[in-house]
Image (tube, rainbow, N blue to C red; front, side, top):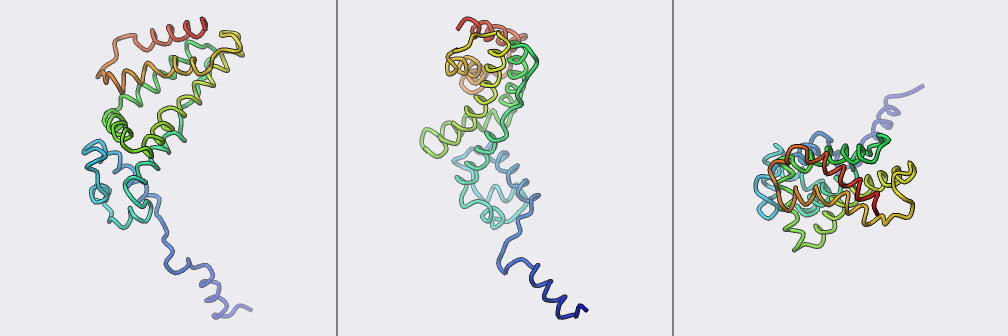
Amino acid sequence: MTTNADTAQVKRRRRAPAGAAVLREDVTEAIRAAVFEELAAVGYARMSIEGIARRAGVGKTAVYRRWRSKLHLVLDLVSAVAVQGLPAPDTGSLETDLRLLYEVTSRALRHPVAGQIIPDLQAEAARNPDIAEAMQKALREGQQSVASGIVAAAVARGEIREGIDVDLALDLISGPLYWRAVVVRSPKLPKGYLGGLARATAGALKAL
């Protein structure tokens, strides 16, 4: 027979330890969204925990429960981009795989928020090795993983030769769009640019 004392004891065992913080996911997501908005609005150097908290509609304590500083917060978010990665196209053709990859990447890089955040973080990366490492991971490793899959599939189909210089192939695939988006910062791609880029890149890969 269960007594009131037994029930109370079970409830005490289920209760979270004293001082333990239960982090609400909706608050965490609000803070993450606020970071991207704040970065786009004021840049990394002027960004503050106070500004992030105000934009997210939470107190500063809610931010500090999750991240020790704005540096750790930004590094966490930038690194998460690399983990999410890009969808790996598998259309059965090297050129159409590249075209799909370029379309997805172009939309992401040309988003107004990304267009403001990436150059700013790259400038900070020149001064901060931690940010540089996170940017390297976010902007290169995720893209390389997908590009490597495209190259491997093309080799398996016989579209490009075995033993191709993979590093050179990845540079050919990934370089042009980042040049346009991050260095040139062209507001609009010329008509037919992505299709032409896919054809040219496929041709270059087949010639390696």
